[in-house]
Length: 229
Image: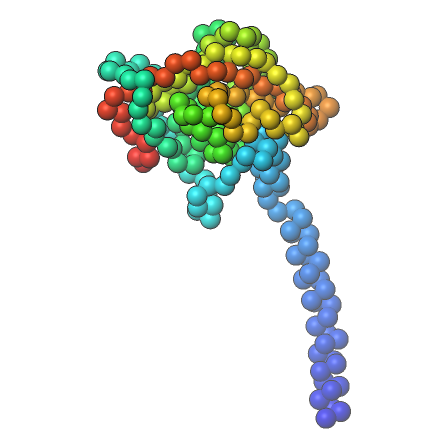
């Protein structure tokens, strides 16, 4: 029995350095691996705040769908119609404004890769043309670089594959990250565009936003598309 105990102690003595080394290496790898994941978390928090939701099947990775958006519909339209809900990662709209020559693609959901392609709409907000608050954000120094130039009365149009919707700027606002009154659901029909205020010294907690009232709905009669691959 004493001999077995001595053998066990010897094995433990020999194995301990290897176990400690393995744990140390694992810690180093864990600290260094996928710095891009940390960046994704930062960007999602910085631009979509608490409204960010994950893809339906996060384990399969992001699937980006660059769909063509109808901007020159020649058929009939109606003031009422059916909303076509996009999938996460799908381009479902285009923001256009002749005032600033603004033409920005809009993706459904927020992800670092989507922010590189256009503006992102929170999946916690309503679709363009629906009742409530449609919340869209983008990088300040890219797609929304001129957001601060909008003035009350300017018009913005969102084109989708089920219709187009015109909004009039009500007011331009600035707010902090912790002030979410502009990006939560609302009883009135509005469009909220916002971005982080640029700060050369690093990350900014200030936001620049444009609050717009929905003034016109034009649904395409017989519109098709939606979740087609």
